[in-house]
Amino acid sequence: MFSKLFKKSALKKPKAPEVMGLYLGGSFELDNLKLSLLEPELTIEGAARSQLIQAVGEAPLDTGGTLLRFYTDDDAFLQVILDGGMTENHITDVKLWHFYETKTIGSTAQWNDCITNIISQPTYELNGNVFERVWEAVGEESPPMAVTETTYEEDGDVSKTDQFMMLYERPLDNDRVETLLVVGEEKQVGNNLDRCLVISTGFDIQPTDITING
Image (cartoon, rainbow, N blue to C red; front, side, top):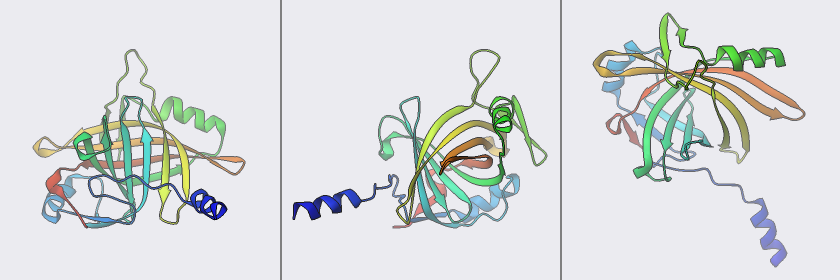
């Protein structure tokens, strides 16, 4: 009997984190009117108003906070940053990101160049728009911020990805901004390292911009 209980416990998959009513397999709705007014200024086009959460990512931050990402069926992820705890009272930032481009990095030399010269630049041009770097370090260089994200998928798979990222932004009307995230991702797949450069654009989400489906 104890042997059977031990086997069941050992096979139990880790539970994906939840916050704001967001959870793996859940969904949320974006305010159609607000997004329709904002979307013409954004890089994205035709964002889905209803989005289903297909995976959840979690990464501890050097500041002591936690980064959560709820990946959806619209090639997007709703990112929630928390500080000091894992409840709604600890949320400091919420953004909706859409993937713009992913490029495979085929060699160590290309990877090193990406980390050193591409991810972090004073400005980054995308689709004819210039974004300015947000995370500035003391001194001449501002290296990418490093995190390790644990990703939980609907089929129970759990994986880890090392990420080296930099945040940029550009102004929009009504004191809003569009943000740009440039990330070098490195993941162990078998005996090989899978590396790529991932570019995403996003914008701030306010409580009135989103409805969580129960």
